[in-house]
Image (cartoon, rainbow, N blue to C red; front, side, top):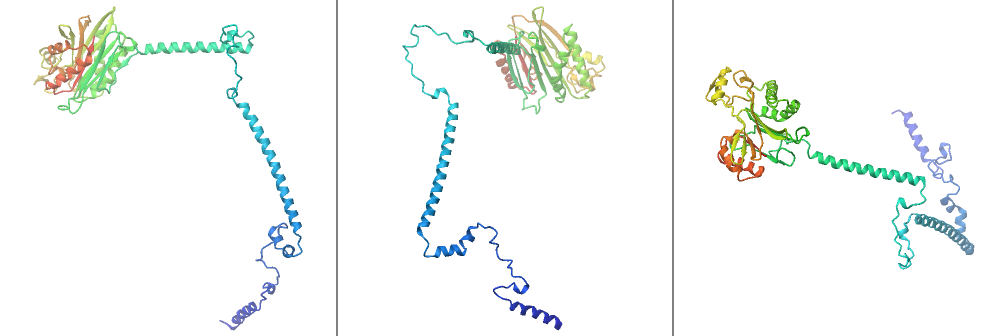
Length: 442
């Protein structure tokens, strides 16, 4: 470090030591202390007046008159009391106004009413008539308008209630399609052609890991209580065809109604649906099917049964039974002849050793080798002796004979109990297939 720089620094420190302690800023050319608080900004500052010399002298002076102190305090008390009186008057006014407004909204029931003697009322025993619109003598036009509007509204409400009651009555006769997801259901008093019916199915888990049977029914077909349809489909190779039939057969049936000739219409319907199934290219999947169509013709109840495959329908009367369907199995002599004539081969009781049925929906690869979908159709008139129609898959008919069904029908009049007995009997006798059954109480 140079000598010039050292001298310069020492001069600065020496000058700082020589600063005046009372006015340390004097050496820098200013007498104003920038760090001192600004107390003179407000003239009425209480702290400034309190610390002023005059107040200090007055407080400490011996000659200060105590009477002046008392006068000042009295004046202050008077001022505070006057303000309190004014505020109390204002509050009283506000409360009075509040109570007046409150009384306007009070009900007349809260007020005490003058008591009236019962003897003074109706001295002449005159019966008072109830006050209605017709009792008013001086009726203004506004009241007349109100009365007419009121009466018209009452009429409209009464008409709506009557219409709703009629709708409820009609809803009872509306078309009722069975729920496809239910394994069991029972219906009664919803049709003019049957008393009631029951549907029940059982997968038979001891022998079958999946369910291929599908059932669907509809009462009051197209809103007509004189028509009912029951359909049962027994799938093989999978449930695709039986599921398709469950979802679409009733729809296709409705599109073909009304029928000019029921038998020809049913046969055309089976062929039409089968042609749509072939478009799905389900080569090794099919389904046997049987449907029961009950209607009225010339006031007489009649029943149509149409089937392909071995799903069977049987009419149970009081003392006899009648098979309505035909089992289209490949080992049947007549069906065997037809299959061979159409170019097919039957060995091992099966078409080409694979399909046990000669007629079915689906099975597209065998449709050119003797398997067809032309249904067997029967028609009967329902009489008073006819009791039940049993529509079931081969899961029941493989183990339960029709004569046994007739014997059981004599013990039961209800379709639900009868259906339960048939399902249980088939399982107890060793049925190894899916089991599905309609019991229709005629």
